Image 1 (cartoon, rainbow, N blue to C red):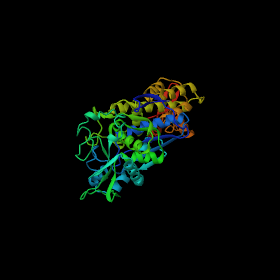
Image 2 (cartoon, rainbow, N blue to C red):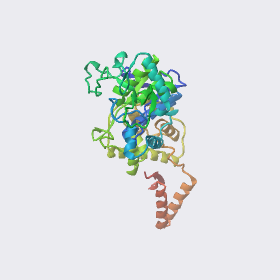
Image 3 (spheres, helix red, strand yellow):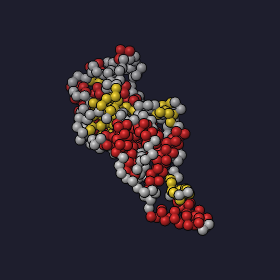
Image 4 (tube, rainbow, N blue to C red):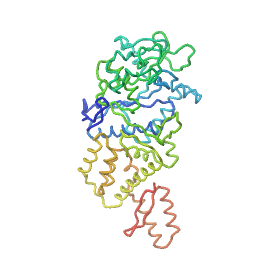
Length: 451
């Protein structure tokens, strides 16, 4: 199996430290609003990663975090906490906001048929460990205190610019962060924020005799170390995490624990709409529920995502989503046809190996989909394999060709033969309610899905 590794900036062979404990950490959502389709895209790609590892007979130990505190509206360690902002907007407490949008995220997660992580971790459950990490960084001389928090001194961590190839010499104040006169370096970042007098921040914990809360990056270093142990095998996220969030995670974890944080760092690219990045601030977002209201199944969207490579930028539009919907419908009707013909469930091991090898080459799902389209002889057993790999519920959404359905079709055929078209039409309408249509062919009627 091969994956692109941001550490080395190239595709490399992936070999886990322990095949029975492949340690994966996935950066999860900040739960202050509904996840939009751009947010959900990354979890679809990492679902493919996990499913591919399973088919290589690896046992995956995967952690997904939920950011319910500490993620400010600016990467410059200033601005308002996103949970606080959401709470004010909706007139709820920050805890109510977090609970509500966690439930919404998990609903979308399950609607997309994504493999459940080993554990889902809320940032607020790890404050004790956060404080221990800040203490450790301070003890090792990596931090300093300002009026608004405890900051990581990036000049003390010599590898800091390597991961994202940052040019620190030319990093001018305000280019990536709004420079504070109290900062030693423009790239320094808060590991702990103090709540200033008069500042209304509902989530607060005492540290050094003052109320405060952890910096956004700290939770991932803390949770991954606590739940999985370092080094990780694979750390996943979006490309927007590379220059700030993941760079800062590495600095915190490796400075504190004196060990590589992860052997592989894998990132997915953006989805755009009309050539612009999807952003809540731009107001150009779609939630999964918006797509459902327009007649698309969540798995139609999942298939659309997997039609593109995780490292390629995609531009979303409904014309392409409709094409993906039709492709999934076509595949399901290929399976429906198999239910109505003599079954041959002998495994096509050569076909399976080609598909798995293709996806194992840096998660190349687009080529695998093309191979599926162009392979005419795929039996039920092999479609089950395709479902295991891509999680599109092709088989599970296809009912067995039951006696009831067969008898219904026989009754319709008899009604047509007797020119009782009213009964035949009634049977047709009843089947349509079950998402089934009947095609009359020279060799007899066959059923297919309507959508």
